[in-house]
Image (cartoon, rainbow, N blue to C red; front, side, top):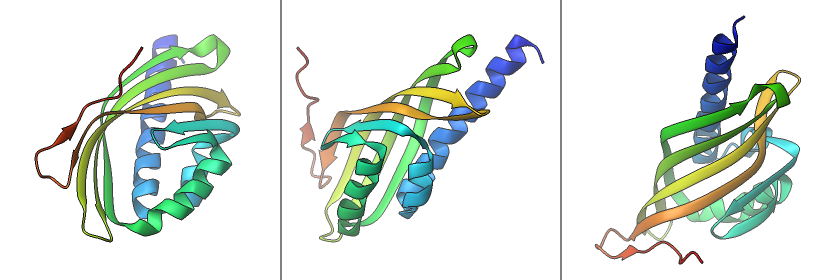
Length: 149
């Protein structure tokens, strides 16, 4: 295989991993969510930071309050270090959720992932999810992103 073929294959595999995660979290399939991370993986969301196992435990507590949810991964950019078996991806996601109290929220998220290829498989080593904006209860009030500084 050529290095260009390897790059395209790695990008497709990583994009598929992002989509697999989105489908799994939307369905509440926490075993598949967990399988998207290496055992030493970490996750940081706006309301959570910890190990991959801690993240899945947190989801077990949070997801019962969600009636419906969809994560739609959009623009995905992958930077590959094939020699090291490492990659960084930046992906945007539109997330719509409806809580059991019928709160409707639309938000734009940015996923920054550091990934590793081990045994021929790509998984997340470290994920940081930043909320770009949120439209809560679809009433027109957009929460600005947190100040960076």
